[in-house]
Length: 469
Ligand code: HEM
Image 1 (cartoon, helix red, strand yellow):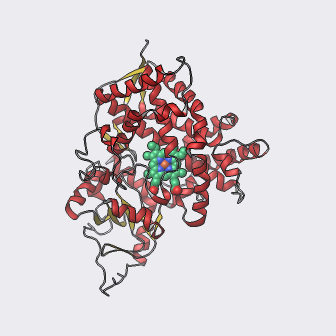
Image 2 (cartoon, rainbow, N blue to C red):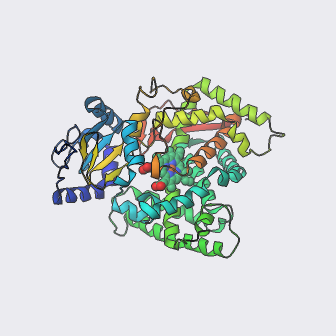
Image 3 (cartoon, protein in one colour):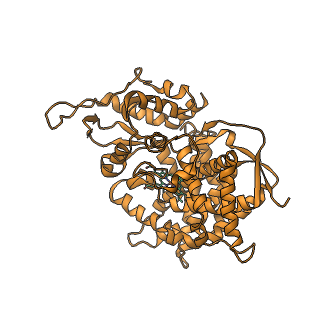
């Protein structure tokens, strides 16, 4: 029920928008080449208005619902959740059609209140030329060439985090969020904007608390506080931009935004800075938390990772010689653990798009205005692509997966531009974690929660202890 309420809060404005639009317009089925009207995909639309929302959330785990539907109807099916008619697709070909080859027919879709809070000019909500322009700037800042010089700075953030956990019972997810936030801020502002960073973090945390609240903008509500924090964040970013314009530029995201002939406005930069923090933080932290969990549950895999990382540590001249980009390229076993963690956990079970016109796919009609959800998790857990899909087995990545079957960072025009940075920060943290620390759970807890990403129960409380203690 908690998950249901969360989802209702999250998507309430989307529900209303869908319901209103649905009343205004009934999809007129287009004709196929043979002149016949096309059928909708198979599936059930459930009850009037509520559709299959209760079935989706009664199981606490939305993936059970998706898997059941797929077994019954196949890789493309219709349903109706939270007031929105939806088509769900769970084959690599259909996901590629929506995200890559016909991406122009499917726009990203978010509730209006979320757009307002993150910033309406942020990259996620865009299509066409403005999106392509932003992507060039963001991809340039997070390319391997741009981020390789930041290994020592990421390493000192990792070491600082680990020292602060030593001997303590910590909530792994919360600590990983702090680590991911610090790395995101480094990659956006470089190392020199420390003057504003503490206040920026505080405002971001207030914004985050209100993000999943009911979008009621009245004094005292979490949403109202979040909107105030959002305004202050815009002001802080404007101060940083002004200071940066007066002096030499670096190779971080802000530098990429400022070093651009078709200059972005301060408001556009602020929306995208806040958007990137949002995209970078909980995603990376969730994967890191699952890695701790899976390695703890699989001692032989953990041993292989320790062997690899100790070998790299031994190859350094002294114990405090910093890691290099080249070292991280030698972490093949650890990289496979990251891949397998992202496959098994599939923290983003799906993404949302909306058909911008009536679309025909394999003889079916996807009506204009319907949501289309590529189900990443179903693809990652299909035995056709990954034998014994529920087994955690990093060795399966010794061979590259079949094209379009492994999409932890999405696919196509909106795929994740931060993927290299995410992998780098995970490798650096795990190098020090497994070579210097051991960890144990406070009590044996297992289970998954959704908030909205899939996470080990209660954020995985753990005690981390230095091996020398
Ligand atoms: C393990 C960590 C991460 C995962 C699993 C992840 C996953 C994803 C996915 C699946 C998408 C595509 C969503 C869609 O198509 O609707 C995406 C988009 C995005 N990600 Fe990541 N991400 C991660 C880390 C990061 C980091 C560290 C950054 C930046 C520093 C970042 C920045 C972005 C941005 C800006 C977008 C939007 C791109 C666009 O709309 O063109 N992500 N991410």
